[in-house]
Length: 427
Image (cartoon, rainbow, N blue to C red; front, side, top):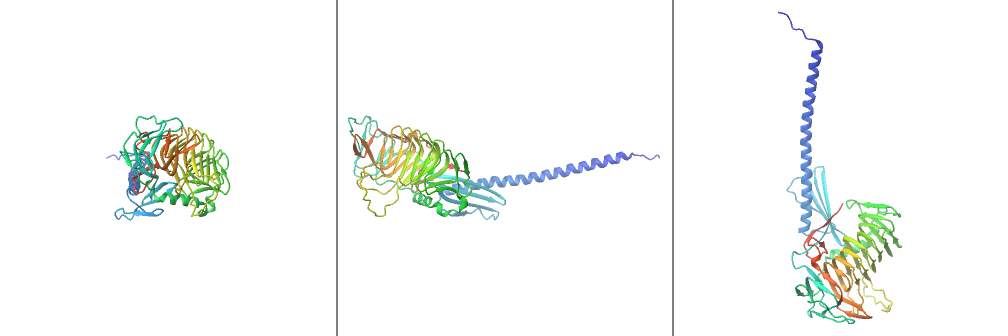
């Protein structure tokens, strides 16, 4: 027999094909392994996301300790942890939910408030001070109204009577004391006023005109602080930042603020300003014409307690702490005055001027002068009307309150034992 002879190149080709096949098989095995690893990691991330949502739901439905981390039971898996922390950002509750599975970590952070009831939403709650509510002019109240035992009646001021066809466009109930806010709100405000004393020097920002500053809520708090007035002209601030002055803060139309908190005895928001922030003062908040504060904003004046001290300043020159919202200004969120009840108080602590609009809730432990509109709810101790040089107690003159124009999805002011929901997801 004759032997079959092969060329040397054929052997090299065969070896090359075997190597290529081996490489392809190795690549395929690696691809399958990586795919399985990727699937496992994806499952972990999806599960961590779900558990973070579960942590948020747990806080909404249960009461947990304030400013403390709570670990939730996940059924005994050591490589899984879920912890929640409840605190406050200004007057809004803040919740952080953190889920960890091995090396995968997922966090959600949100502002929390009180959700609206599905029916019979309150348009008005006026504390019973043994005086009827008096309506004058083009005043209109639409929705459920809690009124004093003396009820409501039409009135007469400077030649004008009440022009409505009904006194209350909705059902009425008898009021007593104002509904109590969550006690954690006042604690949060007091803590904010002492924030600068608790922070390390590297947390302080030195802002400059024309600059932009942003800080995630998952990072440590930063603060802008001064013992003198702070002017925020041509400054942009966003996120986990507090601006605190021991005298006054001025916000201009050139200022851009988002989710930050302003803390000062006096806060002046100049005309045409647009933003979304919380302003917390102890003496005065002035909101200029055509200002637009987007949801969820808050204007809060918490009067410092007098601690039994007698103020001998003549009433003619005494400055009354108050919030003033000028014409055509709009606030989407909360307007609040928190102070001690005073005898012989004939001045408004919240003044809403003509064509000014609150899209949310007004809460006032003293006197409210309502000349503008509230699309939402008003909770007040008393109304004041200043007309033609005279003061009319428990009168509303041309003011309007309509709760049905506030979306059902609105999340707002936290009362004791209120049902909670997410107001806004933070970053």
